[in-house]
Length: 285
Image 1 (cartoon, helix red, strand yellow):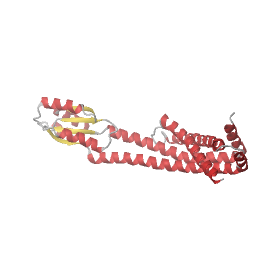
Image 2 (cartoon, rainbow, N blue to C red):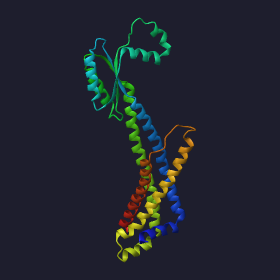
Image 3 (cartoon, rainbow, N blue to C red):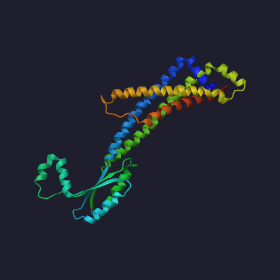
Image 4 (cartoon, rainbow, N blue to C red):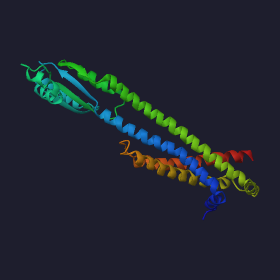
């Protein structure tokens, strides 16, 4: 077994309580990251569902030439932002209104003529860059001379994209803050371990040990501590998720990529915190 790994394991054996407390504190910090990650992921799912329903409705004039309408439908379908274009005739619009608005069925049934116009229902690709992309599609459709009016829900669409940007920024800020807290906890634990072995490190330095040789056991110790804390946080996060899912909230568990990223992030935070603590100590001695 390499010297660095043996020393890291020996450090856990010498101070099991300190090591356990360090892993527990890291787990508590990462638990907040995990719970916020579950919330952020489910918020993303909701926003994606809302974005998938984004559509542009273009109402056509009654005298619109059929050939021009068909040609325009093909042109709109070729736009990269567009997923699907449905042509709704006047008769289809009336049938749809009767089906979706049964409270007005008496009014629709007594009409001598159909007052509803034909229309295009333009369904867009999800994950648009912003409401500006949707507005650009609406303006292009509005340019056709036989299009009388275009609607795409400007007000609520702006709020959806604003909410998505705010959720992304909040995830980065809070995730970074919790990562910093975890690094400070690990760094404090490593500095205590360094202080406990200061005489041994001083002897190693006197006999010619390099910085890398002295640093490696502490890096492994930080890696193991960070990974252990991440595993504890993952288990606690899933326990809370299982308690809430179905009984209180209808939520989804994190994707595998997020879980693996969290475990790797915990380990990397441990290594980074240990590296900073050892580097600072070696500069001081």
